[in-house]
Image (cartoon, rainbow, N blue to C red; front, side, top):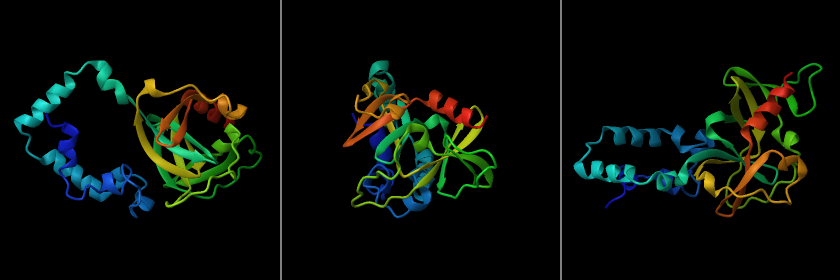
Length: 228
């Protein structure tokens, strides 16, 4: 039986997102502007053609067989998060709280409001948001960056929303969205620094990367406290 996802991959001759995009070697020059393939007109065009294509009986049968699988088998990739780097640490926040990714911008300090990670306010797409150093909050040395070889690195602003409040978090590097199974998250390493350890619910292995899965409610609570 052919795979339904394989059918989708065959729809576009370029298939660039799997070769040079976020699912490939990430060498596509458009990533500097779009950050993720889903924001690119090439990917959007392929998605549009996918939705407009005729659906044959074999395709329907493939998806019917997939949906008949036991829940445990379909839950292998039941979670997703946005992976980014601070200093040497690769970290992840759930995609459900991520609003956008924007170019890095200078923040403007607030009178009598500094320390604890709050660096000021920043304009993101015409909307002001508090800029908070997540590295400071987690006790991560931002200057302790690993050597990068063979790829471009761009600092970004990660904009998240917690309890209807937007926060702009500067990050040193961005890997992109990663789908994973919650059951595959392991226990945090005992060697993690104490500041970071209390914010980590587990560690996910992805290739050569060890990614700290951040406790989103705890992070959101701490960010909110900085604004009081």
